Length: 271
Ligand SMILES: Nc1ncnc2c1ncn2[C@@H]1O[C@H](COP(=O)(O)OP(=O)(O)OP(=O)(O)O)[C@@H](O)[C@H]1O
Ligand SMILES: [Mg+2]
Image 1 (cartoon, protein in one colour):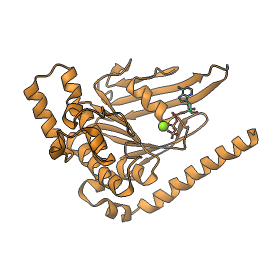
Image 2 (spheres, protein in one colour):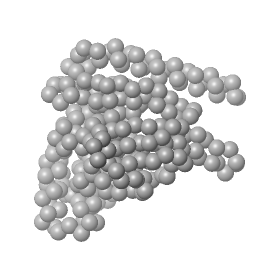
Image 3 (cartoon, rainbow, N blue to C red):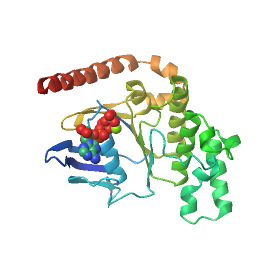
Image 4 (cartoon, rainbow, N blue to C red):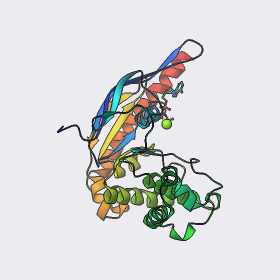
């Protein structure tokens, strides 16, 4: 059906009922349509429901209202067509890099020769071909996140969901990884949703940037941005100096600053 291609988040609300009888409205009437191959970044103050939204798209959580559809198929639970990359700690630390990357294909029962071919290719893509047989705990944080990306790609997902994937890295490694994410996105044509606390990262990596607001978690503002496309062929530092970047950055920083102020004000009133 024309127009149904892509990921559709349809009027999602999520309420958590707490044991003490109260409840938290984590998301309210959130809708977005993400076309196949689009990279969307999501930004917003702590507690505005970003992780909840991603968990619903991943199928780890069922929303109290609304639906997620990939093309025309409703999401009813986790599935290999939606891969997740976490901030850290989701790798099997005791296993080798190779074993981590081939985990999904092995679970699918893929033959060894084919698994090896896929693993070698992906470790080449993320620049870890010489670390295949190292255990994960021997690697730096940046290398571990590259393994996590390769492991996600090995499952051949259509959609990659990333929750602060670079948040635990030092500034320089983070910048290099941003370049890698852009390259992977361009080369694989995957649909990507990336959650980040960094305004710069959201600007650099999102063709579209969605700013969420808290209490209840909802979409506050949306931007269409040229920077991800620019970054594919240019140094990210040059992109940050390019037209419109600083202005948009400042505008969003003030917007989030105001939201945080409001939250602080409200919790002080409550105290
Ligand atoms: N399992 C749960 N049970 C109860 N409340 C929850 C649960 N998960 C999330 N919440 C609440 O829902 C709201 C949104 O949480 P969520 O983790 O999605 O925020 P976030 O935007 O990812 O925040 P951060 O930027 O800090 O990661 C918060 O108020 C949180 O306390
Ligand atoms: Mg979160």
